[in-house]
Length: 292
Image (tube, rainbow, N blue to C red):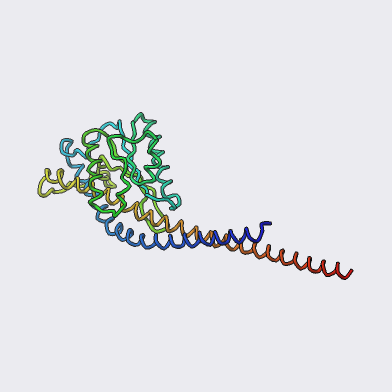
């Protein structure tokens, strides 16, 4: 049985850890509220725009729709979006697992795959993997420092340029989609080429759109802006999901600390009782010896 001092030190240590995890839970809850408001406002607009984007792209010919061009896939760019910090449970691991599956699939199909990591944890993982493209930026972790559309837009432009000039034939995003504070959905989403609109249940294609002001403006301005919004939405989703995952992880850690403290206090009381009993026995034994 451990000594009273050892148990007392463990109680102090666990109690300190509990205070830290409880504080981190409160901080994540405050950040989650702001991040959740941002993605809840953005998601309906981005999803509707993505549907329109698919319909418009399907109506453009190969010379107009450079971002929807379907060609033989020889090179794939995988973009994992994770966090800059840990202590968020399986938040990052789930994305890395999905990326690993995509890498294995690309290699099995004879495709060359590279990774463009967004988030410090992704950069740490892939830095020495040989999967980074020297022509692409190596550090995009600062995107989450005051996340905004203006910060996301240049990254989307880079991805569009890599696809349009033929450097990559497919660009895929991997991130955690925010559902609620306790649930994050690991998502694999094709960014480029733009997927055509889904067909109706009867098998017919959806009706074409009347384009205003003209096709050239749609291609040159609206489609690129729509793609930027899609990337921004993915970043907002991941940002909100991160705080939800961290809040949940810190809540569980705090509960575990409570359970551990109960066990330690019980052990401490048992050890203290045993110590007092031994002292009493020693006193009684000494008194008996004096009488003899």
